[in-house]
Length: 607
Image (cartoon, rainbow, N blue to C red; front, side):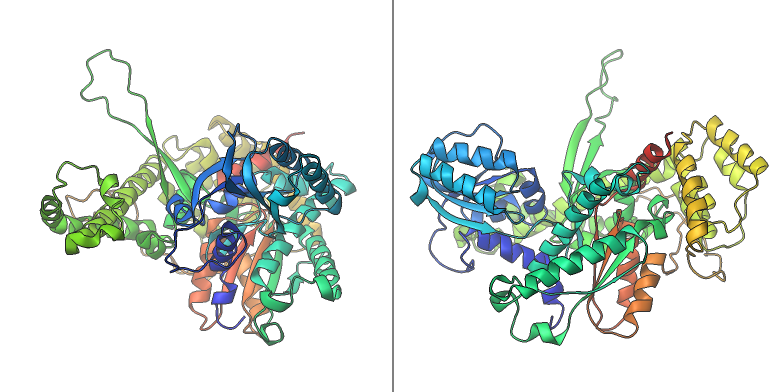
């Protein structure tokens, strides 16, 4: 693992996927020949793995003309090869055998996301024989790609059946041993794929007596078995660069969600975590509802349907990369600056469009003018670049405006600040009951999150009388008390097990609250929204890593069994910035926001 590139799961995975789409031959960038045209057939799992990493344009450059779901109605295309990328499940195998029988394609390259069993391989072989299509099945590969990479330094295990490995699934009081085994095996299978793709065998550390320890034991066993079988080991030969293995093994820190239940409920103040908290943000894509105004519609007309727009927030988006970890007011200011600098260039865009005779053209059509029409001199190269800049500014203006509406409507800045004080044991300036009872402050769910954080973080649980008073206020505010039921049981149980997690030092200085209005004429009227300064405080997960990393310079992978969130991810990213030459990746069994987490707690709290 010399340098970080080899721990960068994103680039490794892209290479693996491109190689697969190139019939499992390494993909060479600048070969002059046209790519071989082919179809890509995937299931939902395959779709989730590919979509955050490769855009439709990149797929087209790889020769993929069509990408279809395995279980959709597909027409035969007899003269084209098909690359399959699916999980080795019973129904998927049946459907592939059916494709062979119906002779849908010229040849079949079968790639399994996770390792396929021998008996299922025999089923495919028999179907190929029966359909006399043996020669057409060109290759069968286990790809070991059963995890989803969202960022260079972040991955999540699955999205399709995430309820199988959810916090609720692991912490159900009525779970049987066999069910628990299945959950653990699912998690271990994906983690194993992750390390095969990384080409490294980790040093494993875990919290004792938790689900994380069960994962550690199983993963350790699976890695050992694979290393012992020298002939078929996945960790030898070309997957590992020469001598890398002996040089430095990554540290895998397996953490159990139960060590810190407050952070996933926390209201946040950084851009990416806020987008995930208040908007519909999923596998790097955010879906917004745009209300299309009622101003110009005649009286009594039906309100217009809301338009749904979706935007991809990807590593290619430079603004996102730079600001996803910034406090929100800073993001709003940067969007504004970008907008102003673009306005200064707008005349340039008009001039270039007229040179190219594209005045009325749709901008999408212009961006399709690729390099091979570059006879139109520099106008071509600078126009798409400027239009791309405008697209990103529009995107972030829309996303940030949507976030800002939530902040203002729900007083999220107040929640964030108050929770930070609770979590860092600072004296509170107003009573918790006041916030819960304030009809203008937040949704019932916001109030519940705040109260749960208070309940989890206090050393001394409130007295029964106080608790009744809080419960009444919460019920009056329209809260569902089920999550509290579960947290009460959880707290009683962890009290027996160990001391509660602490969230940073008690000596935090109160943050300077700069409530300044941004320059007038700005898109974002930040009046009344506090410009909160973030103080770097290590969250429990980061502190665990900190203790383990002091000795070593190995790259580290922090993996949370039971679900993770962008707040923790961002906290780790900020922590590592101050550590020269150290690298970390963050992974979790599922990625949830507070709403999704509260729902699981609520289900656990139902009697």
